[in-house]
Image 1: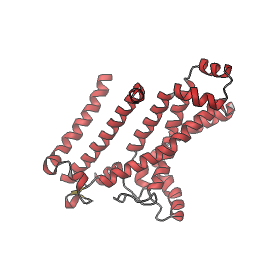
Image 2: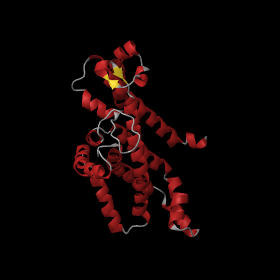
Image 3: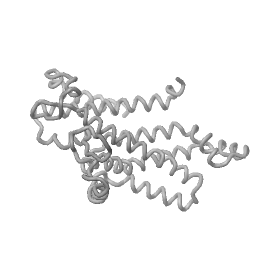
Image 4: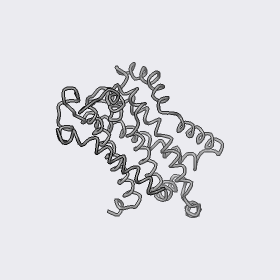
Length: 269
């Protein structure tokens, strides 16, 4: 089963490379980062605005969801009464099971008008960040909750015998002991944020531009594939496969970073 899983990933990567070879041989890779704009009918294939849109939406949601998710897990474990903690965990598990299209629809009919009243037009980078934050929050929270639960009770008893308070114990002992699991939760959430399609497609505005502020509409790489693959042909279709290959490379880089972090190589340096 392990060999089959690895083979499937390798086949997907080889398929993407095979589909992108024709256009890469004709126009090269550099034009996907140097062309004036994204106009496939005019043979212009600049992916940079969508790459920035993907990075901005992902990083923004991670920066908001990570402290909320980890601190809420800490609250459930060390501060909240048991009944409240169990109720909160059930609510988070319910959020984790909601389909992404439902998040996108809710954002479109509720969040977009609210943002539009604050600063038009409404569909924007900020809306995408907020929706993605809500979507990845359960992943970070549940993984952090499991990581905190795996901290040996001997550590906690040792801290109590030394007279350490709750927050001193959490900050100085629990976080270092659960570091690997906390990092894994953030990495998993980042992977979901990068690959999310329907929700960001519905609320981000889908304008191919590099945003100058959080209220401007953007288009992500995944939304670009979903919007144009149905009618793309020739070099246009191959360019969309280049978009998919860029996403695949981003995910591979994320997995490598997670592996290095979990092995402690970066911390040792």
